[in-house]
Each structure stands twice: as structure tokens, then as C-alpha cells.
Length: 294
Ligand code: 5RP
Image (cartoon, rainbow, N blue to C red; front, side, top):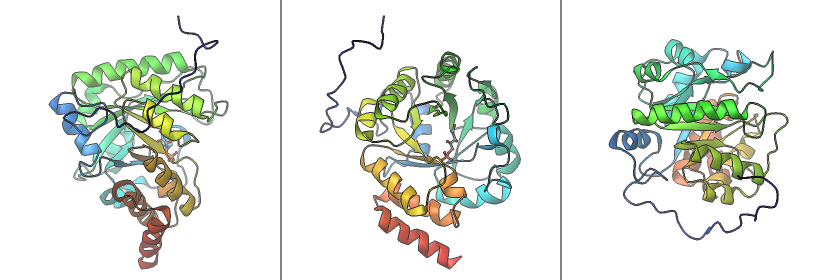
């Protein structure tokens, strides 16, 4: 039985050795079926191996978040600059034209809203697999509460989703939640990201932290980083740059794009960091250029 006391500490992440990648470029997916690999290649650009996911699912717990008051005006205009749109079934169906070519990641779980603010039951299913398939989802997302009262229930939702989505060749994105009481340490993210991958997540959404290169190395599937609360643009670009340099395979960013003074500039600047290896300073020039043009 595993316990958390007296265990020998993990320490050897072989940071100088690339993970085994025979046959397919997405980490951990070399032995997947054709359909799974095809969907992953819509998510992760085959040239860079990375992805820019635009998260706009905030309303499912926060209501009309700043910048997302009118999803129908904001998100379709940003779609040309990103690889994946991540949202709920309700907002994708009502606000995103089905002609948009970007891949879609549909959130399958609900959680307590900010009014009730109690994550202890771990949430439930808001969308079933049949409905996600009807929407032609390229990916499905499940939130997990590792180290918190909702842990067990949210892991059950993840496991059930990973099994159901594997049946249809659809990747599952496991989302590491960081609640008020949760740590944001290397130790926490090492554990949380690995637990999600072990339970079947094909992609893990987590947060950048000190020691991120060990977190990325120990996670057998790609990690994409969330942006979190809005930062000044140069800081958000620096965080994305460091994450990519230290082993992230992209971002799944929301507020740092759609709450920017120039969301289109920020989306394009992030794309340069993620797909072309631009530094934060180089990408900020792209942001400024787009902003000055508009
Ligand atoms: C949290 C999510 C959200 O989609 C995500 O965190 C939002 O992105 P950002 O933090 O960059 O605004 O999955 O559960």
C-alpha cells in the first residue's frame, strides 16, 4: 500500500535523455490507434509538436468573466491564431460557428460555482461522450482536485472519461485544479500531473512552477500550462517561454489572452513562443506590432 511517509524520494529524471518517441511525435501516443493520433495531430502542430489552446470555459463556474461577456464576439475572432478552442458544450454550440477549422476541446465536467464555492464533492458530468462526439470533439476535458476533498470523485470522473474516450479515439485532457488550499509546489505538480497521466489522461493541463523541467520529464504525456490570473503581457510571455523551454508542449491559456488590451496580439505572440521558439522579448514585439496596427 502506498503511503506518503518514509518513501525514498524520487530524484533521477534523466533530463538529458529524450523520452522514447518511436513512430509518432506526440509524447506517450506512439502506441495509440490511428484515430487518436489523427486527433492529437489536430491539437499538436506536427511541425512544432506544440499547441496553443484557448480556454474560454470560465463561465461554467464564474458566469460572465471579464473579457468573455460576449463570447460570440471575442472567441471566433481569435480562432485563426490558435490550434484549439476549449469550452463548454453550451457556449461552443451557441457562440462558435461550426465552420471554424480550429480543433475543439469540450469540457465534460461541472464544478461548484463561485457563489457556492465548495469543491469538496469533486463535481459531476456535464456532457456525455455521445454528445461530445456529436459536436465532433477533438478532445474532452475533465477537472481533477488532487490533494483536496473532491479528489476521489474527480479521479473517478477522469477514469470513466479516459475509458470512454479511448473507445472512440478521442484524447482526454486532465486538468489539475489549484484551489485556495492547494500548494503550488514542484512536489504537488509532480504528483498531480503523474496521477492524471497514470489514470488515463492523454494530455495534462497544469501550471508552471519552479522545477517545471522535472515535472515535465516525469509526466509521460504532454503538459500544457494554464495562464492563471491576468499578468502584464511581458510576464505572461516569459512564463510561456520558460514552460516551453523546460518541456511543456504548449499552453491552454484564457485570461492572459482574452483579458489583454489586445487579445489578437497576445494570441499571436503566444503562438510565436509556442511554435517558433521566440523569446518573451521577441514575442512582445509581435504583440506591440499587432496592437499598434489595430
Ligand atoms: C480551470 C480551467 C480553465 O479553463 C483555465 O484555468 C482557464 O485558463 P486561465 O487560467 O489561463 O484563464 O481549466 O479549471
